[in-house]
Image (cartoon, rainbow, N blue to C red; front, side, top):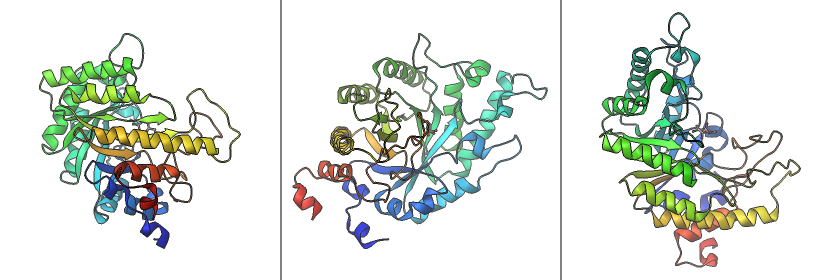
Length: 346
Ligand code: GLA
């Protein structure tokens, strides 16, 4: 580790009284970002390596090597692991939803497969993974429907969500179980997520928390909407984790592809925004136990080339060389409001 990095206050220590500070990792970034991860973060999530398609490519085959590596990376660096994710409509292989003649698997078959998968995966990491995203993105964004259409819903019915939580709870009664979704702070979707969570609670489904993915940008969602979402979910007695935080420098409608580096205005606004966001999150640290970035530094983000091809993005608080951005200093400032910037930087 470079001398200069060693001297920087660790993010996870700065927020040690508030919540864990996590990063999504993959087999490449565990190498290329090793020092940065070990220094600033005390929780990791597998970006892809614990998804159904990676762990369970065919019915009789489980492939745990890469997921195991992430767990041992975390252990050797004293980090927690969030499990991501058990039941999702994406990145799940076709075989799961088909019967032996290639038709649609029926409720019984799909529930049996869901149970086998969850028991195998959650059981393997019992004691190592303290929190699981059990169901990811089941709620519909727009329209009147509460749940989005998916093969899980089509074959099993609405209780596929409750069943997933029951199986996960059987497999590891100690693990904290989360429902995880994006656009979680958009009022229309927030109310649907709230309705789903409330009904799961009323049915005594073993759910402990809600994951706010937090794929945000410089202006959206508004701080007020984020605050209202936090309060709404917390009012159900839910534990909150911010699970996939990034702050894109581009608005959703902005399709420009001409930038080789972020503009000074973008960086300034991003720093201000990160400061505001962490001030807000810290205010609710009684409910929020973990804040995970969907990456660690600007050299790698899923937002490169998505949703606009050929366009890089710079959504984190560390730059492409793993050096602190203004955003990092603002996070430290929010963690230590009684100290001046000069004291923090010295
Ligand atoms: C969703 C999923 C994540 C990841 C991102 C894009 O938010 O929950 O696992 O796939 O999309 O990287």
